[in-house]
Length: 576
Image (cartoon, rainbow, N blue to C red; front, side, top):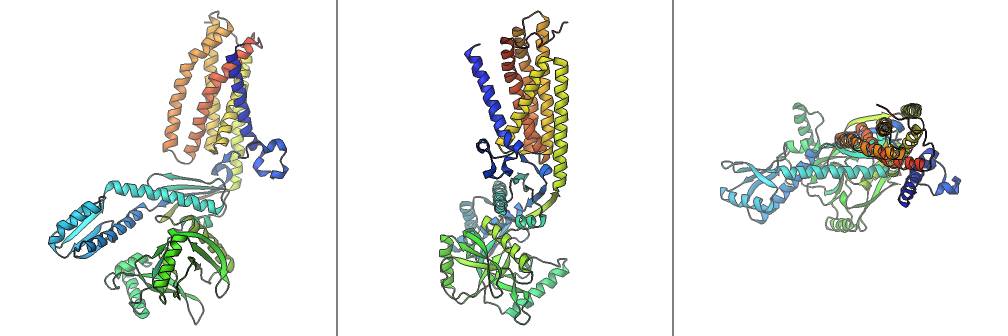
């Protein structure tokens, strides 16, 4: 036999060896065995097992909706603040420059009509992503909007950043084999196999965790602030908002608060009862420092009652800013704000070097509840704040018993399908059927090895894809075998008939596989969840079926024919 043939045969053996090498850890459950108890030959095997999907392993499935519109509004706020500064630098007099409360519009009210052209020229040169939407020369009111391309870029970046933040939180959470992916314009799919506490997952993944430092304003007595807050709540309650947000309250009081301030709620300890009570704070809008400068966050015990709290440390740049802020504002109160709520507002006694601070959690809950809350808060602070609010649109828990039943039924369907196909091939094609069954077994080994090697996820629909792969692989073998039978019916020799049969069947098999492969990629691109699981195994199965049916089977046929092994009973000629 030629040297080229032995090279092909060696490649087949190498592929089979690698396939078995990557499948063995799953069969032997290698990752569940203590490393010290593994035999020496098992220590050289790949440790990673085949990853099971949520429907097979059990766990939590969540669909999160990212409020990308809020991200656009936040960007509009930034543009409005920047435009205000530019107008001041250019000595252009204005009444107001602010984002409209109900939209992303940036509204500018000038004092003089003569400044209109200067305003438009400034926006055109300094804010290329903002365009004039509406103008009213009579009221000197000009409305600017973010253009469509910039809006799409903001939405895309927000979704990407939210994805990375959620992935960091899940990694901190300690969930093994999580699956996190985007869906559409503003959705993120999170699957946490093996996790059984949906409430804690909701708290960690849904918390925005935007940390900021602002000064408490001293421009209004606390009594007046309480009265204003109650007045705003009553007015909003009449308009159908019994639980107004901080943004709605501040919009309601926009003409009654000192310029550059806002009201945020927090908690303070009642000196009489010792209980925490809700309290309003008048806060300066200027942000001194944000959680982006956070370096680490850890849980500790402290305070008057030795309760759990979160101590955090700023990075060098943040520590430098923090020290400067505390030096310049001694004896003033510094508000530590988490998600638009004042966590604490201690009095600055002097410069604070090192960039260390703490977040307290109150004392109304029991100690274990506070400890869990502190741990979860430390996780989200370390992982970073979400760029926009996130709503949990769907939350499903798959029990481990259902997962076990799915695994059992999936295995049974796969085994029954494989046994029936193997029996049919043996019955109908005799010795050639043995070759087809060997190739079919190798095909399944290759599919599972690729899934394990690339850490792809096997789902219940994925098992259906494996069963379909068996059928497609056998279909390719049947096409080849029937072609060979036709050639034998024309009185050709066995080696020539095999060679011609494989050549003529090649294009037919290729056409069928390519069209199915295209359908698989379409499902992978536009499908979600179970559909993607089916598409992954289908695509891998098509590729391995093509290689095993047309290349590996041919190598085995050549070996048997040239060595005259079973060559007299391989095929029964098909006569017309």
